[in-house]
Length: 585
Ligand SMILES: Cc1cc2nc3c(=O)[nH]c(=O)nc-3n(C[C@H](O)[C@H](O)[C@H](O)COP(=O)(O)OP(=O)(O)OC[C@H]3O[C@@H](n4cnc5c(N)ncnc54)[C@H](O)[C@@H]3O)c2cc1C
Image (cartoon, rainbow, N blue to C red):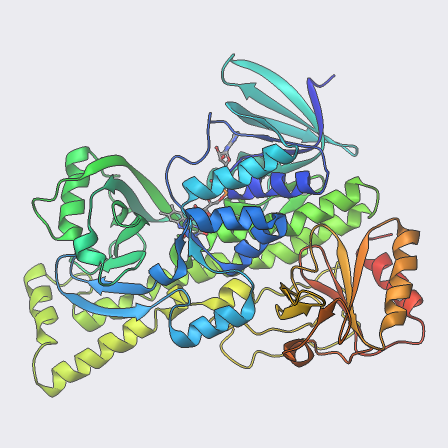
């Protein structure tokens, strides 16, 4: 007999585990989350929070989204990505980042009802965890996962109560391994991986110091320091990162992974901080210091039977592009509704296979992207004449050379400008964040061809309603009070939604009947004049890619799963066919 039973056991309360717990509890699914420590993240690792992750928080409730903004550093303060000799030293260049370039800002505003922001993990985790626990999650801290065994009916997990030293078992129908970059769940389940762990050595130095005099005139969350040695290990350059404006900071500095791991003593940490800030007398209040490794490693299969892994457990990569926590939260948005529908008997277990089909390619994509971004700092060092192997004295001369009036210096300045601008693939890669399109058994394309990307798919989000893509955001206007409402707001919330226009009313009638027959909830909205939601701006007509009498079927995670370009002969038969496929019924 197991000591405890629950429907879903979640190992880990990081961004992935806490988001899964919050979503499952919101959907009314019994779940338990365990963490081997007594509390949540104790260092502010993740911080760049992108629009797609914010859409998950918004789906959890406007109060969750609003609380995130309340604690976050807002987008406009994230903007000036600085490249410098040190914070006190000379500035070498800058680029407007994270949607703050006016052209990029327009794309952000048009793509989502949410805003990118800087929310340290020490704020994000408690927010998600609190949401989960207040809605029903049973949380057990100081509880360590040891091993599990699955059979055809469920999973038995053995845990260690770290307070009593006693082992106990938890029986669940499904197990979620959200246990981070050293995932024991993934290891015990023998999930296959590609790539390499430990490709670079890095250290975090967290401290308090008022640095506002160096940054108030150029507010940013990232200050990149180009000094001798800054391209060794780490994340491509020395980094002084704002944690709280402007008196809490995190330095990221590399070390050679082939050498013994340095001991980051308080003296060593203070020296690194003084060197990167460029103030030999700086006093810091050291909060913590630790080393970590850069990984280039992803699971090629993210689940096995009743066990699903997510977050860093399946994608292990450097923080470049700020994708880790964001992607972890999106993994959970993909899985939670599927688990909920299967557990409620609304879908067959085959629906769960789509988690692997949809998220494994994303794991590969983001691990590859983040590692590529490290390599793309090379041209900046090369243009500055600071590439590895040049002695420090010569480096300084090369750096000075760019200030000459010669043709060679002009060419050098041009090379620096180009190399810095190219970093938009790391610091302004809106497409990487938003262009996720799924191909799986939980999407029915009916042979419709995927639209090609018109612009660079890494840099620019391209809205489409092609089945598999995220539903485009458009502001609609609510009849009566005129309230601006996003298309994403009228979808999601654990339900399927059908969107149609005037002339598409038969879809609404049909979907009501189909929902009843399937025993599931499906929302339906007719968008048009005198309807509840009106497309006054014409933006929906521009982006819907269907005629008014057509329809879109949208999954609980905002992805379109089927569309009809116009009214069909038998809407009920079509919807039945599609839902049978998607829900494996
Ligand atoms: C310096 C730095 C900066 C970063 N910046 C960003 C950024 O800007 N944006 C971004 O999106 N990401 C960023 N990341 C990455 C981000 O921190 C991770 O991707 C994210 O934490 C992954 O979330 P997770 O829930 O999968 O795993 P984790 O946060 O690692 O959580 C794992 C959880 O599992 C628990 N656990 C582990 N083993 C066990 C066990 N055996 N039993 C019980 N519990 C267990 C842990 O205690 C923890 O609760 C950054 C990382 C670093 C190091």
